[in-house]
Image (spheres, rainbow, N blue to C red):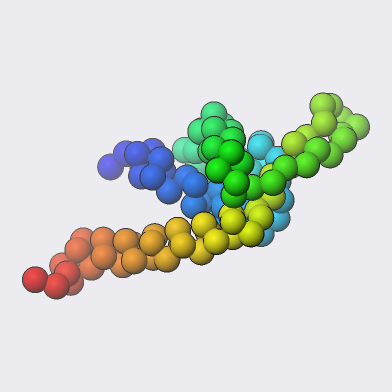
Length: 109
């Protein structure tokens, strides 16, 4: 099974979950997602997700100067983003339980 298709459906949730732990800039978020086991996540997909979540009002941004290159734009969860994370987490948990039961032959008939 191609996990990249699965990742597309849960990338918003994954990005929100990473930002729950700490604010981050684009490449830092990509690195943290990969370190969490999502090695196939693409840079462009994450940057697009960050832009979309920001435009939807789930994230705030701020710029931090860098001595080693250009300034970095950091993303942070706001109240709306935390609410979206909570709702998406509940949806994911229910979906994962249903799929687990189905795959393991324990689904209700």
